[in-house]
Length: 204
Image 1 (cartoon, helix red, strand yellow):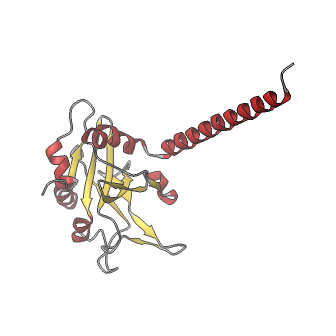
Image 2 (cartoon, one colour):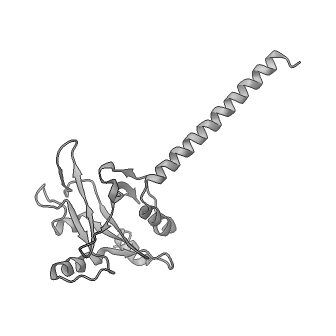
Image 3 (tube, rainbow, N blue to C red):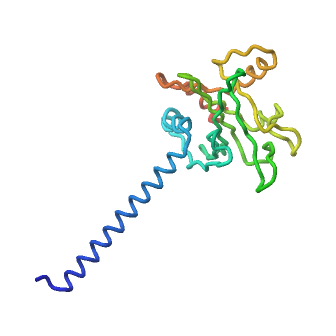
């Protein structure tokens, strides 16, 4: 027979280990669930761009209302990022994406220059083509997409990646200025680091 005190000590140790294992499994599941909520385009950008360049980023804060566009915000190397995934539409060239905000239960409205956003990153994909539009907030304000003093602005836009062939003059004009802020992210060769650093404001 084992002494009662020894048995009690064994039971306490066993229960403690069970709690630790249970906590670990719960924490791992929570971490996995959080990763599962992140859009695959953002996970790909992390793997192919941010991690390879040593960029630091915070966990994304997901936005439930625009979840179909992979909506989230995070910080990247100290810059405040608003992230969206554009959608292919069946009848029009280009890809559609919403970029509105909502104050509590009020109506949706455009972002404003006073909002704490540095970069609007719009991810685009079509087959093997993959890339990001990396728009500084000032550029979107210049093109009347972000409001200035709560005047003007848009709640949604259409983006035109380089693989889209625009036909009408307005779309061609829009694509021309948008492509100045486009970063191609190929999976079979390195990303253009010079362009990447320029777009992410790492170089002047």
